[in-house]
Image (cartoon, rainbow, N blue to C red; front, side, top):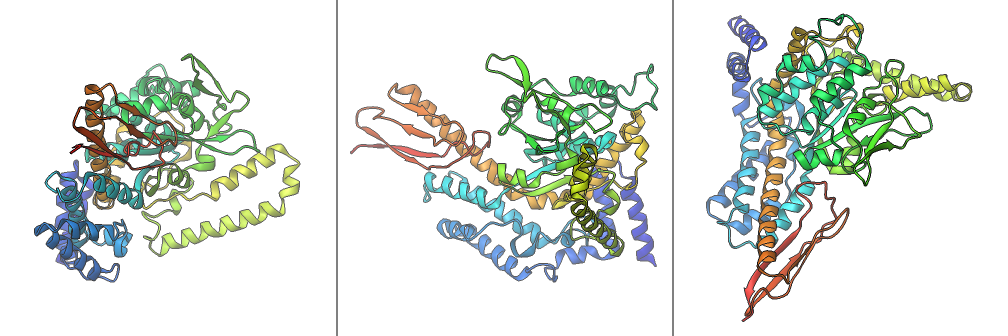
Length: 540
């Protein structure tokens, strides 16, 4: 009884916490009251192969302690995986409120420490060329994380709270996709350098951008297309996808769906549509059929002027056909781990936090959704010919099937505490108090996921940072050599090009040993565009 009362007390403290630190303190006390803290420090559970993890952890620690650099490199070459021995299982992150098994945390930290140690200049018995090749392969095999912001209507403020929390804890992935309202939030964070999170995500400033403080407007009115564009002008600079990437390094992706039935949806970004303007892309992604007019995209031409992009086509709400474009992100960037902020009102009641984390009621809801999906697909196939005779019915049928056949969850799914939303409010102007409430809900919904996100993304983040440091070192050295000798030519590649360093002797008595690690890459993959190792040696 005392344990139950204590846990309820700390649950109230968690629900009422004003900061993550307050929430974490209450979560830690909750684990102590329920005994979950003992579960954390014990290796054993049937959810993962704890024996393999423990053996590998002890092995890495021992080799690093005795500076067995070759042995450490060999062991890491055996594989660095985000789900090593099942340690990514969602249930390992829900048993205790404050985090997962201590063994898993220690193992991830040791992997990161070992990677940074091998990358350091103190390790001299492994060549720079060998290091950069290892880290490139490790990053390619490990993959990377992406944040996907769902369609949302005016629930986009929830996404704002999620993004604010991830930024505050330095956990926001470089790859961000958004559809409908989520595209506006994605554009907001991908088009400007973020120096002050609190100021940037001030609820009053954001509400004002949407006209919520306009006392001449009836706050019960629906959002208009003009309201959306006015808000975009205040929140998002007028940049193309390529310009935004060059400015911030974030890889923004916006889903749009075609108005025509015979066309396919598109994912707009700095790779597929570098010259397209982001504002029009977001307007198209927010253009709910029947509510907002379809949008023609705009792009910057060779003269720096704005012109129509695919002028014969118009685009509408991206969440209709590709709310969470996981497969496309995997193909474009090698993403294989997805953090989802999900606010799509028509699927919220059927979702749990993770794909395999659901109680009996959620499982029944999911089974009902699968049954409905099967029935609708079968019915559409039976009625395919009659439906095809009507353009309107064909379009509505296509929209319905697109919605029901999508996957709406990720590896980590962040959901609002309030699952059932009043559909009449989804397109309404929100008052500042409502904006603050939704943003706060986004923050609080993210706090319980932070340790899971940190544990599952820390290795990938470390690999990216190390490769960026290596490439900056290579570029600095190459630029210095080029400055000292006009005989050096640095040839940079464009899309899918090899990048080579061509040289003659920098000075009498010296020669350049140039080793080019050929890598087929894309210049928009920050951290992937330079693959060169070289050193100057005496010719004697």
